[in-house]
Image 1 (cartoon, rainbow, N blue to C red):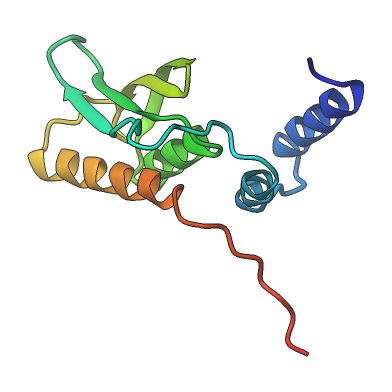
Image 2 (image 1 turned 135 degrees about the vertical axis):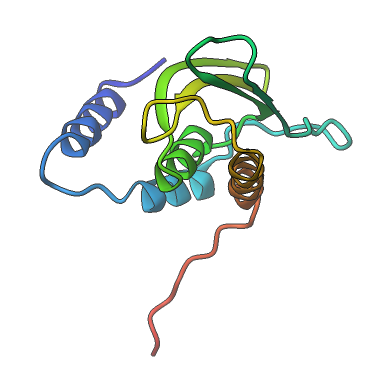
Length: 146
C-alpha cells in the first residue's frame, strides 16, 4: 500500500522531471538501492539477462526485448542507453513479475527508420548489457574529505 507521503513525493519528482528544474535520477536510484533492494533472489536463482533484437515482427520498427532480473533503475538505465545512442522509443511494453522484468521496446533511429546496421545493433546490445550489469554494482556513498 502506498502512503500519502510516498504518493506526494512521487508526484513532486514527476512534476520536476517535466519542468525546467533538473532531477538527478541517478542519485535518487542509488539512494533507493541503498534503502531497500527491489527483489532478493535466492542463491542460484538469478535470472540471466537476455536481449533479443527483431527486425521481422514490425514493418516500421526494430523490436528490442529485454528479459532480466528486475532491479531498481532498470527502465531508467535502458532509456538512458537508448537516448545516448539516438534511439527513439515508439512503444514500450513493460512486464514485471516475481522478480523478472520482460520489457519490449519498438524503436527507430534518428531518421525514424528501423535499425538494421549490424554494428549499430551490436553496439546497442553491448551498451544495454553493460548498463544492466552496472545496476548490480554495490552502491557506495561518497564521503567528504576531513
